[in-house]
Length: 86
Image (cartoon, rainbow, N blue to C red; front, side, top):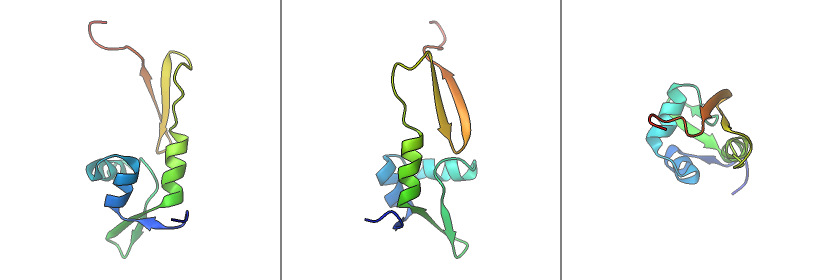
């Protein structure tokens, strides 16, 4: 499958190991991997965009006490172990 190949929502969810509902949630929030809308209704994902999204969200354990992820261009910071009762 080449990088310009387009995938439907089910195929993209399978490749990312996530649900189709999560992809819809990301689209509604203008987050997640880029998508293409064809004919006003059809949603497709380019394989190259999905690969880039995965690479951009790679987390290397042990790099500081904060876990920073880039999701759709928005930085989210979560303190490790910041749970009630700890």
